[in-house]
Image (cartoon, rainbow, N blue to C red):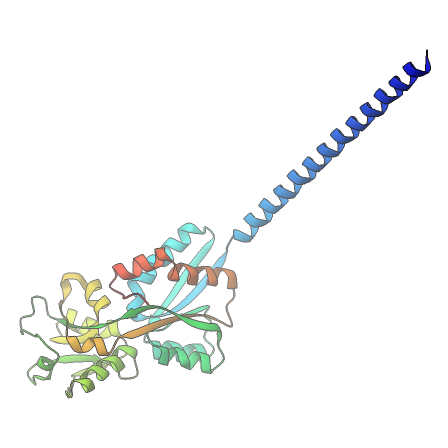
Length: 274
């Protein structure tokens, strides 16, 4: 074999070896990439998996909309459960600062939320997620012809208010003060649902509650709007609590409340956007 032929043969052997090495390297790189991608996908899937029970303390006026959101959350995240304790925001705040186990607090006013933040029980800064406005709930058909806040001062009417320490009661008092009206109710109730129930059971002729409660009651009550309510709109803040047992799940529920989907449920119930 000539020197030229041997050189050409050696060149082909080197080129073949190089090509084989490149193919092996490419296969290895592809395998590593696939493996890395699979691991990444698996990790993402694992991190997206929520579990555990979230206990939410929420203002009574949120009962219907939060119950709906809780059901939506559980359907979207199998293995989770959302439990609620609804009531007057002041009572709920006192329970939280007293050590009651809860993961999330949704209050009907910044003032009652401040009780929790001042005690150091909130994690992070509370965020306002909706607002709510007052409305007069009357007997069905409004037989007493209530047309204004001033009409509630009629001594012949049995009127119910929320306790002044409860956000709906504080807002009602603010509206009355702005109108320079004095009203003596037959009772002060501990939360807005209790005030509404008095009218539903015909134990009272009218109550100052939230628009959302009149909306939720359907044909059980009548509703009368009054302009003074614009001066007493309540902001609703929500926060994660320090003692939350399933932090990621609790945060995800708060995210749902504040999302476009959550806002759709809340505005449909009569709440105003934040």
